[in-house]
Length: 163
Length: 143
Image (cartoon, rainbow over the protein chains, first blue to last red):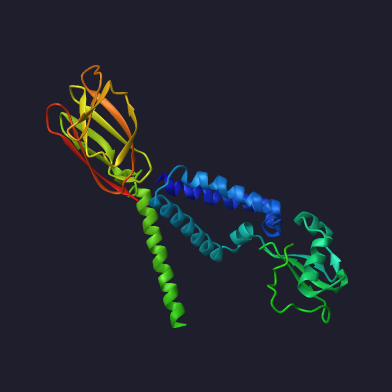
């Protein structure tokens, strides 16, 4: 009983916390972010299992987390609004070479982030070569170059350059 | 596509199994719930305990002695005694088990044990007072 409730509570709390941290934090992964994530994991572990060292306890906790995650994904499929709130929606931050300053400030992205993503994905050098820069829900920046500019990198994932 | 369909079916079955596991855990099949509460014994010695326990996780056992303050415990090799409340006046080795002497107050003695299971599998605890029928507790310890 306690195990299931504990796991469910931790799931909900983590979901809210990581949402508050913002998608930038999840995607950028500086050394500090990485350490922070480890520490969060450590703190969570205490809340999840406490001094329970049994295999059974671990199985129950894992089952609870997995089912909650599956249930959440099913729920998101049916309720697009929920999906927006939990995962965020893609956001255009550069339009035809023009930075949308207010949006970028709110999303905590600057010109350098956009140029970095543009260089990494397409070898672009200037903002005006960018048709659209989109901050994806996953936290990555997708760059769509103006027709004829840059080179698409064959092996690169579309959102691989971190914002 | 046939493989994918089978895979999806397998996935759904897996979810069902996990949901069953969670429901069982919530009900107390893995200790700590209504299905786990159990009682045993008679007039001389009675006990409230948990039918299910997990290895390394403390389980509580409350014993009531109707008269004399001596409790003999056998078959507790698979447990560490983490705490006994109230503290016994003496603990003796007794017929392959332990005998706890408690200073009695008003006649009945209620003792709470906190036990840490160290071995998984079925454990049989035998509790006896000086007179009367003993109580046998069957505790299933999960790994």
